[in-house]
Amino acid sequence: MLIKNIENKIKLALFIAVASLVTSVIIVVVVMSHANRLIMEERQSVYVLDAGLPLLVQRSFLEDNEEVEGMSHVNMFHLLFFNLPPDEKYIQNNILRSMYLIDESGARLYNDLREQGFYNQLVANSTMVTIKADSISFDVDTKRFRYLGTQRIERPTSIAYRSLQTEGTLTRVRRSEQNPHGFIIHNFKVLKNEDIESRQKRQSFGW
Image 1: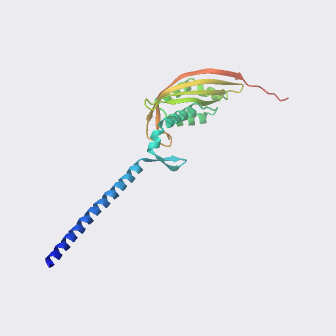
Image 2: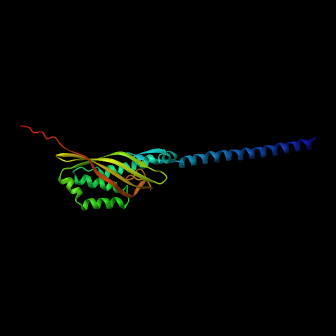
Image 3: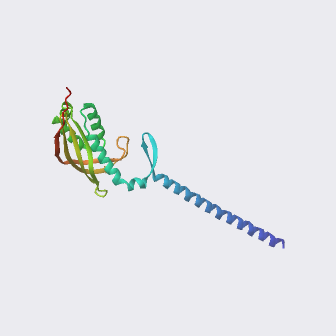
């Protein structure tokens, strides 16, 4: 009888040990699975700066909105490069900022315009050039974009409007403060830049 009780106690102890081991293994697996899920979720998160404040953005959100970001990058470049007040320092500052968004094709275009005296004429004639995007298309698969906009050229005595059409391709790069969308424009070309309308300003004289 005593031997039987001892055997039962041994079996009970063995059962408890095995049950404890199985329970521990299950707890470890659950904890590791939960930790791995948290790590994966963290890797899917990207922090971007907005006015110096870090904002959490989901990576899937960024990927799903690549088309929107691409078009915004193209628009930002055109606003910086083609908005030209009669202020030499302002022009130089904007051109410098736009160069962070484009490859050497942007520098070539700027150098061509500068050698032609384009910027000097703007300042000398007190000419204000502004641009408005009419349409921007961006193919996510081929990374090609096409921009169609209208330039308003205001001189002291007249106002003219020109149609501007450009194209190029976008390549992903690391985001930075100077390049918040993380794109670089390649092979930038001006396809069309022609007059639409021109009219004289009304002159008023005080006597």
